[in-house]
Length: 567
Ligand SMILES: *[C@@H]1O[C@H](CO)[C@@H](O)[C@H](O)[C@H]1NC(C)=O
Ligand SMILES: *[C@@H]1O[C@H](CO)[C@@H](O)[C@H](O)[C@H]1NC(C)=O
Ligand SMILES: *[C@@H]1O[C@H](CO)[C@@H](O)[C@H](O)[C@H]1NC(C)=O
Image 1 (cartoon, rainbow, N blue to C red):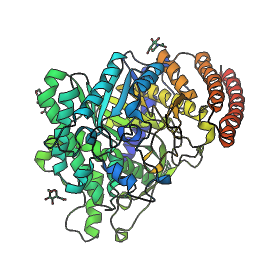
Image 2 (cartoon, rainbow, N blue to C red; image 1 turned 135 degrees about the vertical axis):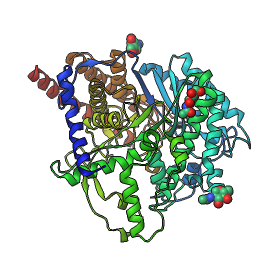
Image 3 (cartoon, rainbow, N blue to C red; image 1 turned 30 degrees about the horizontal axis):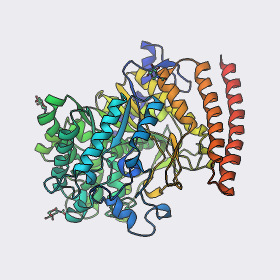
């Protein structure tokens, strides 16, 4: 794409909501939009196997690369934590389904552990019947409660043996093993599961697993490993989709898509065409890297150009970005029945030239810097600033770039580290309200959005961050062997939002806040009154929530004054 076209596209995107304005009552940027979601819009929460299940070596499960990574010694994970037990979710299916009922969600998005089903990763070796039964029971429990399962085949916990034997996603043959695994899942669960996600956030999987090494398998192959991995992941995705389309769709009538995470990007200087171009590059390297092959049959032109040029400058004969053959292009193109988008934050992008002689790297290839909002609230989770309008823009972007695909928001949520967050998570309610409202605006703009998954149901193992960040609508006591769950204020807030199917009126939406605060402060006291509490826990669980609740009440009063002022 030429720079001028990019700039034009950008402005069109900015104007899109406003053009919509002439057609219908327009959701304006900057003001809250009261209204309801279309009938059939699906609300849910998400989780993933490795982050929650525990039971890492039980009932015939094989090891995953994350088991190996977390067991391999110091410094890989904050506090050297593992997910050997995590939320103990393997033994708490009924309890967690009860939480889903309490939330009144219409779907639950969770992932299957590949090594739990196939201990070596290879279907021809051995299928673990206990693993099949476990997920089969989970699915039945959901359906009995009228909750639609949205099933992710792979959320990062690759069978360790596939890493050892083949070098993981470095190897093309993994696409075949993934297809066989997917086929097993379609065969075993497809009579009841109608929504499949092949991969969750493959961008992070490739970058953190093969470029920075911060995630399992911990490889540092800058500027090469991640592109190879992504290339094979895309082919694995396509093979699974084709297998479904050819063998299963006729009988099972489900849909197969992929879930891609990308933070929205905004130019640091909106008048600087170089920054605007850098934003487009940022989005193409993040989202287009996977979405473009699936929707247009090849990598984004800007990736091919940049990586090709830099590879040449680095004295390489071939581009570090792999090339799809003509046959592969047409095989990969059109392999998504829907596009899942995960969005957590918004970045501010500015151009920065990195000389090629610094050596190959993903960062170097992009020639930009992605900053966290300098004005955003810093609540302890690095980079997770709340700029809800970014979600609407990302959805509008996907709608125009990939020609109006069915969209799901497959991940959106906030982590909090402050003790304040324990049960009275005022900031998460704010985040949820803001982002779902922007999503509603995107629907009014015309985006075909089918559902929303709040990330996540429970506090859980957060990869290299251990248990230091909490995303849950439910608080999990990780230092109690029983791993009890307690609803945070946001759980109640979300339940109200779901049950109202949107935002009926200022007065009602405001009452959700107040009621959620009331409940959470009572629950905080109950939690703190438990017999096992030490003095220190009393301080964090009674004093801090009390102070927080006071703060929140003051904020509520201010907010109400503000609302009255507006009406
Ligand atoms: C892929 O795996 C095969 C079989 O083990 C092996 O012969 C080949 O060298 C591997 N390729 C890479 C790039 O690791
Ligand atoms: C998917 O399956 C349908 C029905 O069998 C077939 O008509 C169609 O060509 C298939 N799509 C692709 C891309 O293979
Ligand atoms: C659950 O949500 C639906 C709308 O999505 C609503 O009709 C129903 O009343 C809700 N149930 C409860 C118990 O709030």
